[in-house]
Length: 319
Length: 319
Image (cartoon, rainbow over the protein chains, first blue to last red):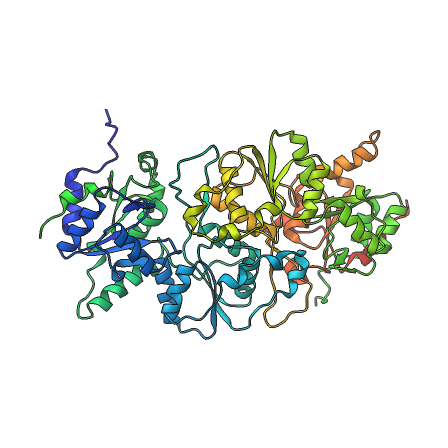
C-alpha cells in the first residue's frame, strides 16, 4: 500500500544528486521564500552551499525587480546573496539586448526595476511612464489611427507591467509589425498570490497573458523569451560565472542542479538544457500534480521530489 | 493564359446566387463602408434589396457601438437601415446575457456603446469607467493582492476597450477563475486601419488580442463568443426576424447570403452555418489570399468572389 508521501524521492536518491553537483540554481518565490517570508531551512542551505564553495544562483522569471532590488530583498531576509548570484529576467533581458548592439531604442512594457536594469546596461528605452496616461484613451478606437509612433524603435520588450494598457499594446503591436525585434521576458500565465483568500480570490495575470495579446495582435511569436524554460537565462548564468572567474571553465551541465516549484518553468528549464532537477512542495505544485504526469510530459518530470529545500541540506556532501 | 481577374466569379454564378436568396447579410467595414466613406454602389444595392422586400442585415463584429449608434451612422451615410436591420456584437451580447437571467451583475470590459446596449436590455453591469483609473496601479504587483472584488459577479464579458488595463484584466481573470460565465464579443486579432501609412503604420489591436490575455491568465476558453464566425450572431438575426414577423417562419439558411471581406470571420460564419457566401475585395482580403487557399481551408473558401458590392446589383432578380 502506497504511503501518503510516496511521491517523495528516497534519501539515497537526493544524497546522490546533492553530492555530485557544483552549481545550484534556485527559483525564488515558492522555493526560497513566499512573498516576504523565508521558507524554513532556505537560509541554512544557501549559507552551507556557499561555505562549501558551491556556485549558487537565484533564478527568477519575475521581471519587475532589478538585481539591486533583489539584493536588497535578500539582505532584509538575511540571505548570503550578492548581485553576481542573481539571474532575474530584467538582467537577462538587459544583457541579451546590449549584446545585439541594435541601433535605435527599445520600446519597453515593464516596471521601474526593469528600466533601471536596462539603463545600467546602456540601453536606450522608451515607453514606461510616458504611455501610462489614459487621458489619450478618451476617444473612439478610430482616433488611435494617428497615435504618436517613433521611427527609431528597433526592439520591443514585453515584461510584467501593472500599468499595461491598450495604448502600450497598440504601440508594441505597431513596432513589431513594422519589423522591430520582438522579445518577451517570460511566459508565466499568472502569479502566485500569497494572500489569504476572501470570497473571490484575486488572481494576478502574469506576463504570459500580456505576451499572448501581443502575439495575437501581431500574428507573430517572440523572437526570444528570456525566462525559464528558455535558454537566455542559462546563457546569462554562464556569463556571470565567466565574468567572476575568467580563468575557469564553468562546470558541465551534468554538475548543475535546478531546484524549483513550477513544472512548466523550473523543471522544464532544467530538463530541456541537460540539468538534473528537484521539485519542492512549498510553492505552486502539489503532490497530485507529480503523480498525474504522463509519459508524454517527460520534460515536466523532475528527477527528484522533496517537501522543501530544508530536506536537501542533510544530504550535502562535505567534499 | 489566366486573366488578372481570374479569381472573380462569373456573372452567371453571381446571378444564380442573387436570384435565389431572401436574406442578405453584409459585413460593414470593408464591405459597405471604409471608416466614414461609403463603398460605391453600396447604397444602391441596399436600397434595391429593401424595395424588392428582401431581408437585409448589417452584421458586424465591432463591439464598440450600440445599435442606436449604428443607425445614426447609417443615417449620416444616407443608408436605408433601421435598428431591426443591425446585428452588432453589443446587441448580440446583450440579448444573449439577458436570456440567461443570471443573478448578480456582469463585469464588462468594453465601451460606452456596449454599456448602453446592455443597460437597454436590463443587464446590471460593473467595470467600465470605475476601473479606468490607473492611479491604483502605482504600486508593485504584490499590492494587487487586495484589489477590491465584488462577490455578486456572475458573468464576465470582454469586448473592445481602448481603456483596457492591467486592473481590468486582473478583475476579469479573478471573476472567471471564481466561476463567473466567461463571454467574449469577438476574436478579431486586429482592426483595419484606413489611415494613410506614415513611416511606422499604426496597427490597432482587436478584441481577440485582449481575449487571448484573459484565456491565458485564467487557463480557460470563453463559454461563448458572440461575433462571427460563431453562432450567437445568427441566432440574434433569426430572433430579430421572428420579433418583426411573429407569424412567419424565417427562410431556411439555404436562402441566406453572407457578403463579407474577411475569410476567417465573414466567410467562415456563412459556411459554418450553411449559408452561401460572397467575398468582396474592398476590405482586407486580396485576390492572392483567395488563390492561396488550400483544400484544408474549405471553411474559408467563399462560394463567389466579386470586386465589390456594386457588382452584385445587376444580378438581382426582380421576382
